[in-house]
Image 1 (cartoon, rainbow, N blue to C red):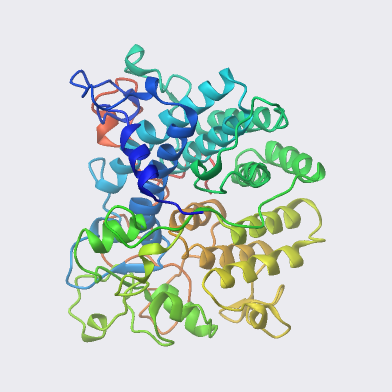
Image 2: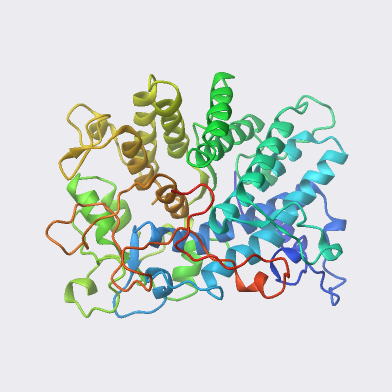
Length: 501
């Protein structure tokens, strides 16, 4: 399936709605151009891909950059300033990485998905109904995981409610899970269903894959609850797995980008093409030392060589000759312009299943699921992971060590999930998982210390936070709080979201 062709580009241009960029308020532009159709002139087939493109524009762009830095896959190049806000944890309400996801995913993602849900329900087109429901749940979940509370029950109402209340994350999750169940229970053999075909940018119209995506998303959402609502997590996961629900064994991702302005991978477009330099994001010593310590063959995919020079996370103000030689993340050429953007990867699906198996099913299948996750993560980068999970391999189930000490099962699963999230612009997910599980562990020393354990996350050199503190959330964006009178009191970046530790 080809992602971008002339027709898709025209579709994406013509169904975008002119709305004031005021977060969830969706105030219509009174100066709307009559030559550009509004949502009322669209249909689910036309509107759905626009919502997907808007979502990946942020998850694969701003959040790929911020998430990858917070997960310490890469860091700001020394003596440069482009991303020092993220690398120093200095992200106030006016920061680009705080406002961007809110300002795009709400009006261009969630509004479009709600349109698809409403119109496909009216026509009993359950294929598009399921697709819209799953994508709305995914995109809403990202916002909840970032900000903890967002407008939900009163959102997307247009000018009829310009001050929607903020709902708590657990209530939103509960509603999203119920909506997915409703969608999964529709009649997918009905004659009223239409084939999404190429307008489905994720699976090319394969509805069985959408059902697997829905189940895997449910599993992820239930696992988010293990710290705060253990009873709900237990009941939801045991019922889901016990029902024999199929989970993803392939990536839920947008692929087939082309190396051309505006048609390429969003992270590449934002970080390299628009800035006209490949040099801002450099190898982080956190990730590099872990890859090198395990002779992990993926290191050449990310940093071109087996022993790349790297920078201690956040040490961008240092004038260090070694830092100047630090490798860029991915390549300095255009090879990553066509990298995919993952929603949920096959590797992540297996790691989610492995974690659930450890927590609720006596770990009977955990080894097999974990191994499949590692293999899928390696395969995504064109590498073979089988030697690494073989007996005596560094990632052998039950025998992976950190600082000479074997990791407990959950820590081993999340450690490998962390490594897998460097692929496919998916670093924001490993940031969330760190704050849910505590893994990878936080180092007691900086990465230039002889006692540093490779791969443990460090408190960055130029942190603006109190000693020992790391970000746990994104603050509410200025674009919303300055206009919505129902905005909550600002919460510090160091306060966990509702499911955090």
